[in-house]
Length: 84
Image (cartoon, rainbow, N blue to C red):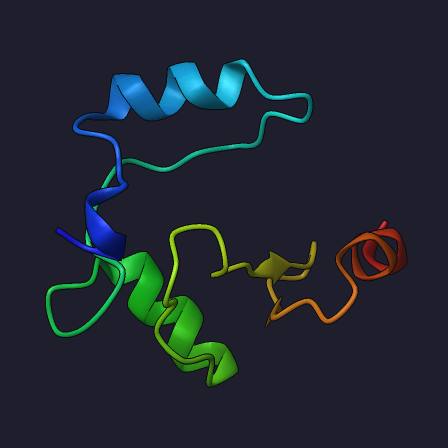
């Protein structure tokens, strides 16, 4: 368990929660995000940006531009707008 056992037990729980939010996002499957057991996508995003391991389950955010450049947002709304 990561993040104080606050994570959902399965992918369906995550998808249901996201669908109920005002701005549902695109979700990946559940998986480890920290350490050597982290999923390949998390390892890639962190290696591309130098970002540290997330310490809470909603603070690891990455943006990917249309040309594939990965970044860590400093001002999420403005950073998204600049990529559009």
